Image 1 (tube, rainbow, N blue to C red):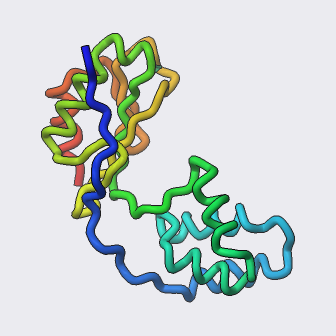
Image 2 (image 1 turned 30 degrees about the vertical axis):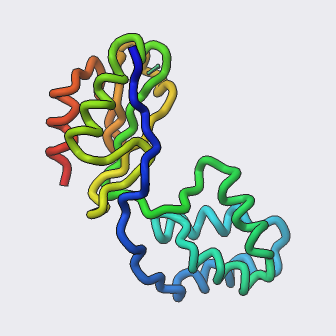
Image 3 (image 1 turned 90 degrees about the vertical axis):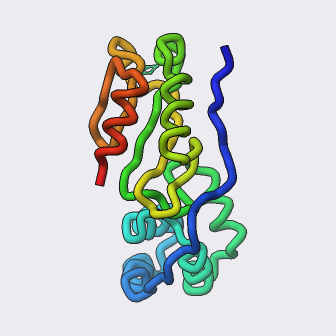
Length: 167
Ligand code: FES
């Protein structure tokens, strides 16, 4: 049986403008420190929730680190996100245990019900949907992580209900 874990077209709207004042303070804290790019990117992501392109260009200008090197680091590490994410993060596990117990069906149903493809964010930034491969709760598969809460033995109706109840 095929599942449809899709990485569809971006559904996000235009990024909001970026305020550099707090980023300037972060850069001042790391001024002159070698090897500070990763902590700078971590702090920048903490600040904005993701790594906005204008912020990366600003970091490059201020630190004189070439922009392509910054992008190289930002795209290499899974912890960094280059697109704005939703207020709610739903991770569907499609690891082996979850897969054999129907995670593909759950994912298909959720994508259909919300109009958000795996790896994407809704246009109103309410929801980001991701697929992961084991959340360490195989005994209660199929599992989803909704924000920080783990839900196990999910069927598609319960999953959709929980996601639709999010603010
Ligand atoms: S495979 Fe889904 S929790 Fe382990």
